[in-house]
Length: 285
Image (cartoon, rainbow, N blue to C red; front, side, top):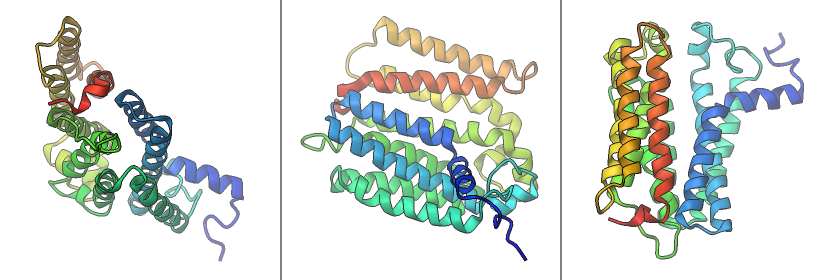
């Protein structure tokens, strides 16, 4: 008997692997952290190492996720996903995930032992999510750890290895929690049917729609109010705009089911911009 992927060409497998890595989030996180490295003062070689390490880590996480969820995705009819649709076998995706994770180790440690250990802790947290924590009440924790580890990974690779300010790490962790809620929201009914009861699934879709913009709004508040000295007019304007988006999303849910998700993305975008603007101030108390 032929396997489901026996007739798939090599270019077809490569394309399927590219789609199975969750290319959107993988690219977004890689670009964001690389930009953070640039604005924080890492030199060209340091920025390249950050980009390579984060890309390898994100590829491993995306492939692990699709390999673990293959049967569940197939049962839920998500045949648009490469593994569930038979475009590539789960074994090939597992091999790619392990290879990317193995490559991530030396690439992370090239920024320094402490910096590398912090980044690898974040990657390990994401793997823990895929391998079981996603179905528990602690499903938010890997997102908080994974996103919270990114600023220290960048700053610990600077001369002297400084830690970022506490409010930077807390804001990044909150952005991760918001990403978790927004990412899971569209799939809550299918997840519950499959027996996946993570934090968002336990809250239910209605509560998640209302709650999703709040973590990135809190992150934006920390990034405006955390630095020493009073915020400037631009900081207050960004915070006010983020608050308006956070309030508008749930209130418009009746008109558009995607409004809460769009609001969460808008508020998170404000937080990301502020994080990048901090630049060399990331390590200031």
